[in-house]
Image (cartoon, rainbow, N blue to C red; front, side, top):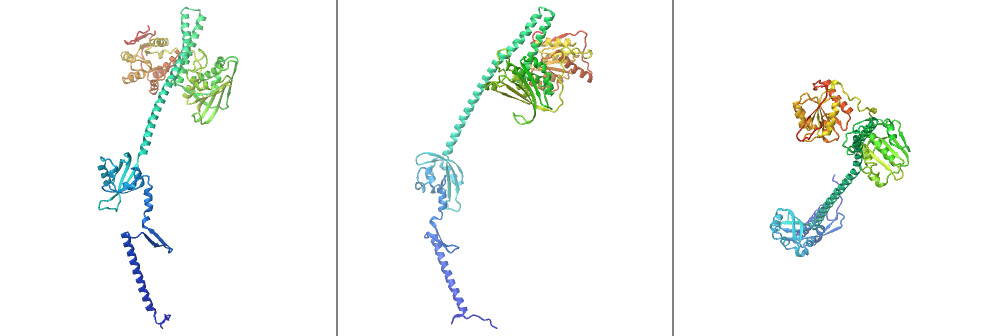
Length: 610
């Protein structure tokens, strides 16, 4: 069966209609292709100003060739840098407004000319090289007004552009005038700042020198006065003893001289503690037990109109400090409090735990020991200077100004701190902060008589080489050694001591000062003895903690601090010789029945006492 097909128009079959439609479509396509070709030819010839394109929504879109590059042209014109296009030989094809402003003219006077017009003749060959090599650098650009503007220029080729085989290049020119001005200003400001710093340093040096001279002046007025008083007691006492006074009076004079000497030693300790040159011998201490042990001394230093109270927290932690310096610090604070209460009052010593403290530059567990009074207090000026050495508000002869300075040096040397709270007419409170110690406190040692334990056993006696350059100190130390039963040979320099050791093999011990003339100190003497394998042990003495003293400690050399008593010297020598006698049993020299003293002199040493 043949499928049914709908009938077409009368006289025309469907096949004939389809063929005619195809012919019409082909003709339409040919016409559109011709129009497109004409449009392209017109675009190529520059005869077309705009192109109308139908969009996706069948709405026409008009694109004018005149404004096709408007976006890019606006971008170039608004640039802050001068921009131009030019040929390889430097002919300018285009420039933006900023470039014309930079050379102080209008674009019409720039375009069509040569870049050579704006460049110094001597620089032009280099600029031509920069164009071809696409380089950049700084260049002085001449303006139409005759000025030279510092600039930075950068050349680059425009790819795909060619003018008769010469090529087209782009040049970006940046004005450096403001940068140079800013740089000059910065350099001038830097020079001015350096001058200010130099002037400030000079002023600070002058201020420090002035303060140093002021401190020296206070030193001569305070310390010298105190030492003169002490020396007066000693010298005056000696002159009286020369007259053979009665025994009772002689004993009182000797006791006064001894106290004066001890006060002088304490004053020296205060000086060294402030300068942190004094060696601190720290040990665990119970504050309540220590302060109560000082009660009699403190009561004797205060007037009857002053009451002393102590308040200690329960389960107070221990501290680790120098026992002697702690006592001096407490005594200094109590004496200052006494002097601040001429009409009487109350001094309170308190101590409490300060766990996990985070202030005053400290961190950790500390014990706060404070001394407060109900006295006159301090004004702002005195508060600002109270810790300065030699500064005092007391009258001449009433104080050296080292009390609080000693407290400051001791506290900081013990890894603690000092804080002062005071107001005029409201009293003063001085707080000492010391690190907590978990060690078991050691009871204070009992005092001994200067002669106790001085005499040593026969088995410890030996010949001692005393090395001391000061004639009076050498004489006194030799007398002390002779009193202890030692035979003494003296030398005034380290080199003389080495010579004596080489010629006297039976020397059992060397007692030498650290500080000596001749280029070789006590530590160097020990070092040389070890190099020469000279065996006698050495005991060094010093009254000043210098670098040489610290070196001696690192080397394990025994030390004895000046001033020392006969008992101190005897105990130290007994410990050294006794320990070596037990461990090595060397021959320590002769033990004569009558001790004598012999001196080895150097030509420059001067006379020695007989």
